[in-house]
Length: 352
Image (tube, rainbow, N blue to C red):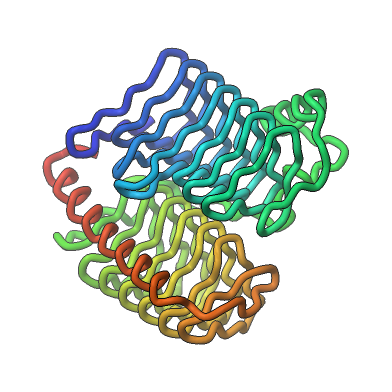
């Protein structure tokens, strides 16, 4: 387990916590007793607090993060989060279950005893009542869920068992596994104005512009291929980029690739946003300022028009990007520039 202070904050980890390989816990994180973290699980409490109750279980490549200086993340007791699940700046009540690749976004509240189906997305600012199974993008109530059924889902995810209606908790699309060991290729980049986290893996021909960053448990598997990451762009925790030999990927300036994204060979123009938990199909083009919404899936060859938001599976045009949204996203890029500088400074000082 990699435990990293951030600025003046040290993680507080209770007794009897179990962590598999390459788990990372950062900053003002508080972890309760008896928790389990699967391989490459990442908790980044760098801009706010993360508080995890006792007896929680996080599967491989799960991510917990915050909204810098705005919202922390709070997870109750006996919560189960399936592989690639994302808890972002929200509150998850006691005994809740999140299926594989589920996403809960900023300032949302999932009340005790709720279950979120695999690949579902809880949008920002929503409150979901307990005692229900929620599914879809956005997540909506599907059916009441009994305590016995909830217990069965907890057990199935934690024991990796197969049960009836397993699609409730198992992602339908294959979840990309790491092809190389974490840390591969990280030392190849020495520039003082970029940051690559120690649990990332980078294989292939990469060109990184100033102030760009590749975060914890990201894998770029581009053997025989080429990836360009533009100035002040970032690829956030537990995202996967898999290219085949001879393919290219261009990511422009001031682009944000959110947590737990899966990407194939594509072109992303300046100031675009690739939302958390989304899947970007091969030969997708995202024009300047275009947005792929959280949890969206673009079909191969999709072209996302400039300044528009595309959502759904398959992704379709939803609405124009508002000036307020564009301003908010631009602030997010600058926040990551600040993270890049802070983590780089800590790295040079031998911390993390």
